[in-house]
Image 1 (spheres, rainbow, N blue to C red):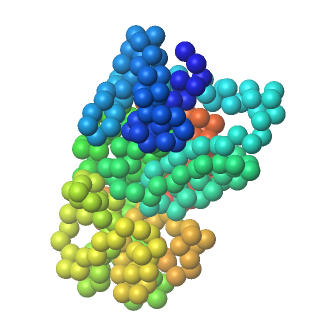
Image 2 (image 1 turned 90 degrees about the vertical axis):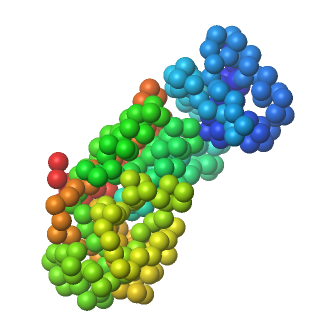
Length: 305
């Protein structure tokens, strides 16, 4: 077993595709396939199941990859310490719902570890893809929420994919409004107050069931609905149309500007916002730093637990 083979399997796991992994590694596809098969034979396990759509990680492969990533992480630390390799490219990835605190924490990690070369990825994406990204090692950490309405389904998917959910905080639902919105002066708003205004939400592609909705109370019938894919578009429409969306209430003026405000929504519901990670895989130094940074960007007034 070699470090090169370990790098090969980690890259295949992250891409979920032999062809793409070979391209990133600058090796031929047959060479990559043979190297993986030799490693599987030596370790007497099956790391990957091959399918027409790519590869999936076996249960044995999950555990093996956890050790492989530890070995590679320690190797990098040794090289930096004793070989003075300062030009090594740092790699780290997070997949999350559209939360400003997740972005701010990501910035902190880059400032701490970025150096002269790095390859970091922050994917604000659909709920189903967050779970898929972490299960396939495309991202080390995912961030999403559960509530009384979706918790059973989301937690079942998390367990089925060999992941674990860790709560960051519990929040009461808030609405994001324009600072010029007619309801901006209210200390708290009700669903009846919002009935005449456009409701904005993030679309979830083919997994558009309310279980995967990023916004709590998504099953309510609203007369005016607009779905978008990105944060900037959503906030532009919130401002331009006096629309609103429902979220945790954690807001960043640096990212969202002075024109977006949060007001508590008068409903009997809570959002459990947390991280998902591989169950048997210890966090990298970047992952550990990111977890700590998250705690620094969650306002204490939002925490209910």
